[in-house]
Amino acid sequence: MVEKQSLLQQTEKLIEYVKRADEKYKEIKLSGEKGDFYNEVKPFADEVKEINDQWKNTVIQWIHTERPKNIHEQQIDSCHEHIEIISIQSFFPETSRTRFKNLVSSSIYVLQTIVFALDNDKLG
Image 1 (cartoon, rainbow, N blue to C red):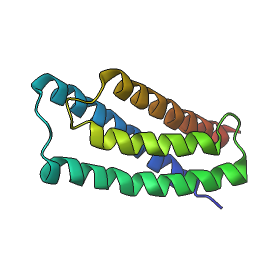
Image 2 (image 1 turned 180 degrees about the horizontal axis):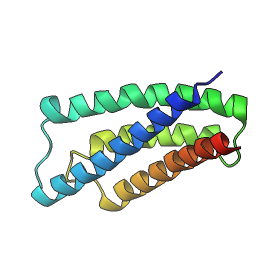
Image 3 (image 1 turned 180 degrees about the vertical axis):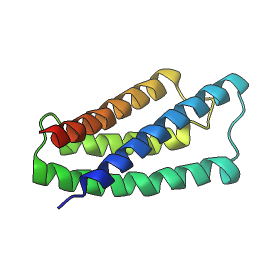
Image 4 (image 1 turned 30 degrees about the vertical axis):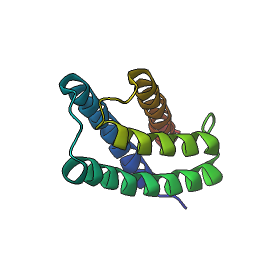
């Protein structure tokens, strides 16, 4: 049985990480300077990876037990991968703006869809 409150917290934490990465990307793009690998990039990417990996396992269990509408395992795999890419590429000014924005948008969409489904489940 999946602890829905835990899944909700993990999902909201990932939304926060994606937004932080997006802000970091904007700063890096303006300054043109890469983030320091050992002091910035790796610690942030490791922190995100830990939550992202836990979230993926939890949300896939939830999908198997609850069968939410419009949320599928393939989306979760893609979202998980996108978040990993975002957490690293946000520190590099040469990262394509369009591709980065698309990864951020699709990740936020999937994460918010899960939050919505969990919130509605509480009501029903």
